[in-house]
Amino acid sequence: MVKDAVLAEEAGRGRRIRVFGMHRIRFRMPVKPDDMLTLAFSMSGQEGKLAYPFKVSMDGKAVCSGVISAGILPEAVPVSDDRKAG
Image (cartoon, rainbow, N blue to C red; front, side, top):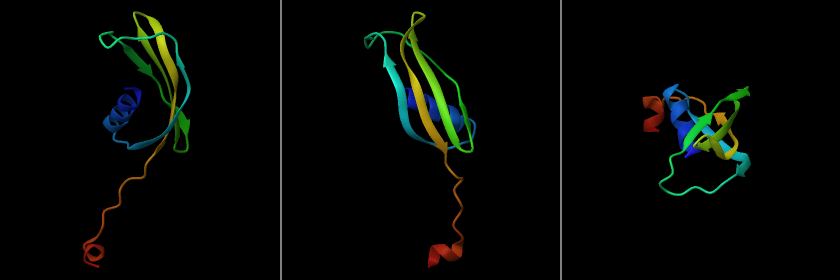
């Protein structure tokens, strides 16, 4: 859920990222399939190394928190017709 939201947010900004991992994950209380959850995250980082601290809440109470680490992927380089034929 959190990873998908981060990827969608960055895609909306026109950036492709690769998630490297999740750190400091804390599950604070159980949730059921019908529970309404709220996700909040922010971004920080430098030189292509990004961190997305996040918090998942239910009724104003934190149920999960942690940090996603990621990196910006380089833009795809188009392949010329010469290289395709070879």
